[in-house]
Length: 127
Image 1 (cartoon, rainbow, N blue to C red):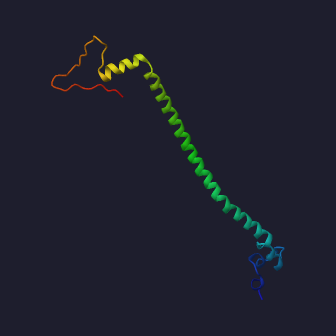
Image 2 (image 1 turned 45 degrees about the vertical axis):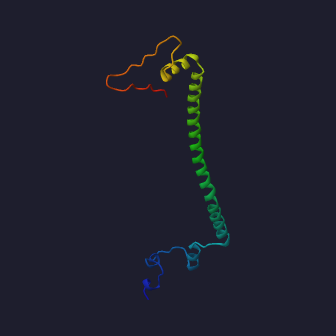
């Protein structure tokens, strides 16, 4: 027989010794021990159970950010409305609104309404 026919690997066919025997080749193959399979299963189950809480956490964090933005906008709107309310308690502001928006005058005064030629009078903007 030739060396090629009896050799089991290309390295042995060239005459080099690998230092392993047939039983040594079996030890190099990755084997799944019971302990490794249990650890793998536990890691897999832990990963499965960690997905739902992680997703819920991310959704709640997004909702929290939206609510924080909404609170900020409402606080700004509240401050603006409070400023308008403070202005309405000022007697000079009330008098100005009564004159401009309602056309009121003090006793003894005469109210004039300018009318453009050919057009109807434009009411004041009282927002």
